[in-house]
Image (cartoon, rainbow, N blue to C red):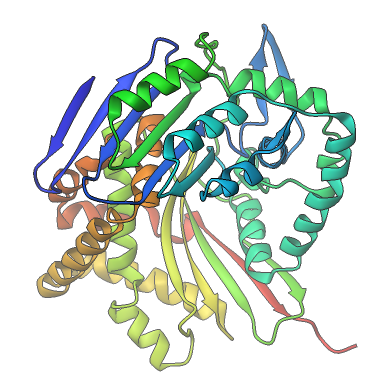
Length: 425
């Protein structure tokens, strides 16, 4: 076991790698009655092409999300119901880069942990249940595609990227999931749901040794093979399309402007890059920025406006948007403000105020057991220690933010996605 102390956070993390290669992290929270467990695999919506037994496989879009839905099926019934009987609150999610299964409970924690580890590691599919799920997930996809906020994001990703699977929705399409069979799910589970490709995080007042002992007892003994993944050819710096507009049943236009950024390296540099990107977005166009105040006072944006920097496998981008009657004017204002900050610099009092707010919000998020677990899993999969956030944050200078804005927030890297109201026939 390796115990790491974090004096600035008042926490510690106890890491241990099991004999089968599974990294396990326990975050002790003495005195808390609530306990939380997350069992995740580095397998997400973008992992559609990979090597198995020396052969490259192309799998249907949406299969990681589909597999997440089916993993709760067991030979005895349904794991969700079993966990709920024990007073647990279970759930799962699939992102571009990972799939995670989790629960929290105040009682029967280790009994619930055994259920979690068992159903995630031992798949049970039948052709009949897989076919039935297609209708359920198809309805879910239909509902998402009717959502303007989702549609404007999907269109932006397809503007930004030509070859990266980031342009493909995590849930896939009704057509793509129609090609998923029980055998396809078994194949993907065999490749990606192996201990060395997964991570277990437990947060709460528990004995770390008991967590490790139970995981060793329940989980497969084999590590699993190294996984070769293909996220497409390297993208060119410029977007595939500059603009895309679609009509839907909305009362006013909703938009996203995106800026295509280079991919970030793995390890602590990736974490640092992520912090720089988020902080630069807040400085440039966050809800306390001069730009936001001006756009809001002019009626160009409302409270729906937001911005962020996102890192996915092989790609990275900045996006900002919300509702606006003039998305083009907002995009031009963002570009102009970026040029101004690069030329004139960032006012010191404002810079320090935003730094304090961002730091406080980030530290506060670590009070959430779920946020802790997600952060530790992401760090495990990408080679950084999420609890080193204070040291990383301290290393970032004003010049780092100006450099980021200068290099990435420019017309050459920009794309605009707009959903506008349907015109009356």
